[in-house]
Image 1 (cartoon, rainbow over the protein chains, first blue to last red):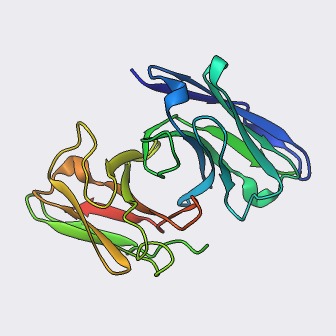
Image 2 (tube, helix red, strand yellow):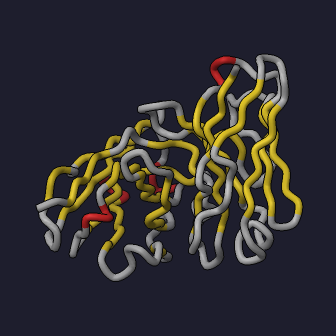
Length: 121
Length: 110
């Protein structure tokens, strides 16, 4: 059974940093691209970032480019999101999502339950 | 990148068919056959229903079907059932491996 378990969310002040983690199990992690998708409270989904199976291609939404860094550790079956210079508008539930392909196709067939990030003073 | 445009709400009676539109531009929906659809029940993670415009993931009912014409993609739910009541989001490639979601549609089963 595929499982994606996010962690690392919490309350953080504007301008500070936070690192999210996603532990994957139930599939061959290094065979697939992975993504982060977020959802602000009572709002829609927003794609944040994606990374290919071997990290040779990394992409970001314009809203987080230069502030967020995605990475993965295939040996640990884990995906990460380093979030710096956080803003109030980054407040959201952050989902880890598996792509259907080793490359960035942008079809997300498995999702975690999310970790909540709240940016507030 | 602006969100794709979806109707805020669509409703139908059990057994009926409904269609949800997803309108983008020639830079996203119109340029790529990489449109996917997601179902999200309240408090739950999204679930992939359709990928690459019209393909079904394993385990998804064929009552859900997808299509695309020009800059608009569509999701049709046939034989509407009570459990289909949820929010639905489209998603498209927007070039250079970036992606954009739709504004979301609340489906109500009357």
